[in-house]
Image 1 (cartoon, rainbow, N blue to C red):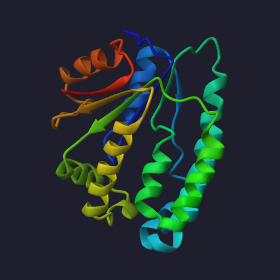
Image 2: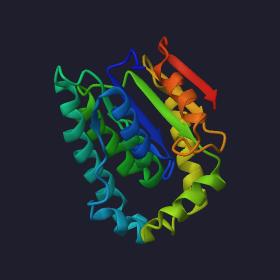
Image 3: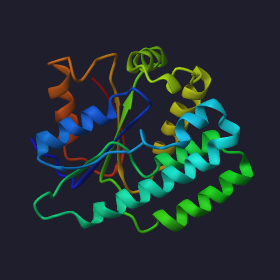
Length: 211
């Protein structure tokens, strides 16, 4: 069951399962993949140790990396008419809004507008919503040392900023999927329902559905 969209982006908080799900969807649809390359970013561990000092460097590095990746989405091969990404271009704005002081945030928004204005935007953006206690459980299960010190207040702020950002998007299709505590990788009934949700034709707008 292939979607009627050429470019699908999967979003969510840390541990929501974005990357694994994007890979599964790409295999399901024989699609090209765009995966965020965060593990090799030298600023990420530094940011979690000293956010105030390294936030601007981190956000700029991700901005540049995402720009180079997503620029290639507009050059899709005819052999891969569908592209699935495990993030969207708006992710940079969401995180910058949570981490940067007002003056740096304003500068960042200007740079974002210059760099991202001509990039392709997802035809469907899927946000995986989890309650905070499950987000914390999945972060602990991942076992990445630099993620263990992330505060719950910061995660809650990110979640709220994500939802606010998605509600304000114009002209696109946003699907917020309340996972209802289900694991899409292990629950044999949940994944087919999810696949049906993301494959359904939709008019531009903001949709919320529960598994």
